[in-house]
Length: 314
Image (cartoon, rainbow, N blue to C red; front, side, top):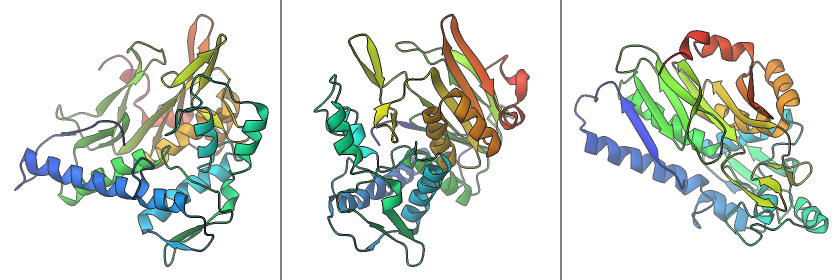
């Protein structure tokens, strides 16, 4: 996944030591990568992307579940979020190929790339699980949601061992269950969206929830005084340019939190907040202003995050 992971347990499960657990975690993540990593040439997703056929391709139930969630979010967002956006991401230099890094594509290049996208050109079948493209050039990318799914798989493994008090983290996406080793709720620091520094905007308390943050302040390039983010609006083929800098989402799974955070960041402060309210998504928005940052949160976020008391301490 190109990142690190960490797992905090209140106690070790009976019969397993730390080394055995670490090996089990690694094995699980290798399996997830083997299905959903675009950096692995022989993964399920890479082989699907490399194919030029339009027939049904058998996949696992997990692959259908993750892809199906991404397609649901694509529809709810009106297409601003689209798991077939990879040609545009690569065109702007943020994918596997850095060919166009620090270079703004032409309008013609953007339109050519957009012609090979479209979530409505992808179909899923639940039984038997399979996927197919309706256009041979179509490719998919689950990077905006698969990391959260990996968190959930690790969490479910820990639950299968009888554990109920743990915190799983992969690249900043989290799943908190039960209580912390202190015996209280898990306290999560939400980062202030400032490039080049690490500081805390807000501290929240959570339990039995997935937590994910999406922001435009880490991965970008600047050209002629303009900053171009890696977050690409599939409708326009261009990076987002609004003032919303970061969105944190709480959800029943890290996978859904991961996907929703990206959706809301793409939509921006107003449209994103309105959709979050309609869909009852627990979301925390950080908006860049001339004098710093303003924050805004849905009622669901306030209720699930411990409210004002959590922000006072780590």
